[in-house]
Image (cartoon, rainbow, N blue to C red; front, side, top):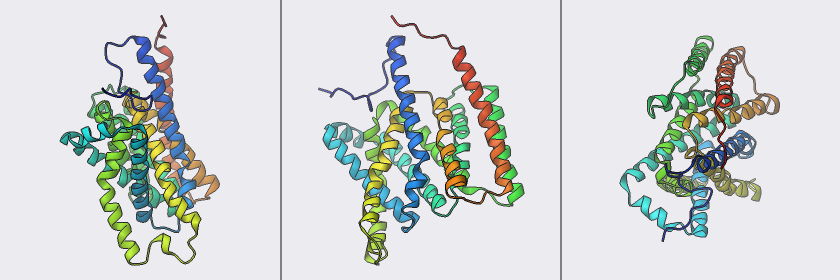
Length: 324
């Protein structure tokens, strides 16, 4: 007998469901997505505490301890059957290998940006990312792209061009973060109805874990691990282990939420994280933000304002669903 699905990882309701039944998963999905982006916005505070370790080592620990956290949850919730089903399905396994690689790349670039005083660059990337997500929703999933969406995407593109022209260099951290996470969200959206959140994250972590463990083992053999430093205390050890649940919780929220709402709604919600990150970069970390970056930010913020205003207007025009 198939176990009763929980709220966090139940499949989408069947098309035959009533309007009232459809509304509940959508509301739950929005809450999950909002929660994950709020947590992601505060991540720079956590990763600054790990600055003594290298960016690649931090990601290695994130992957290993995320897998450990997921396996504990799988055992506690008795989800081994779902895990075996995915491992025996080649096309799902391939998709999760791709999403695992994409999120690992995203993690690495993000941690590198935060720990090299480029949190503002990371924030810019996540401001651009929702527009990339909406563009992918139109190009791949054939979701409707409104004229105002085209204007917003055009303004974000102009911001990147302006940065290149004024700085003389490509904002690679911003662009890499936007593209890697946009593609990750697309993969999760495509496989979402067939893979629950916990199983998906477990397989993603397992696919990249051998590389992570190999790198951590290499550092340990050379005596270069952050755990082996002369000044290393229990605080560093604890912080690296905690990277597992710290990483797993928002990703599980994201995976569960993206299956319940349109990808364009996910794109709009993503502005929460970069707003928090930019405030931290400017007001807490006191990073230097040159005029070119401010100019690009203004263009992106205008694009965001246009996009959000249109979304709010559309939401207020929709007829309310009457409950039986």
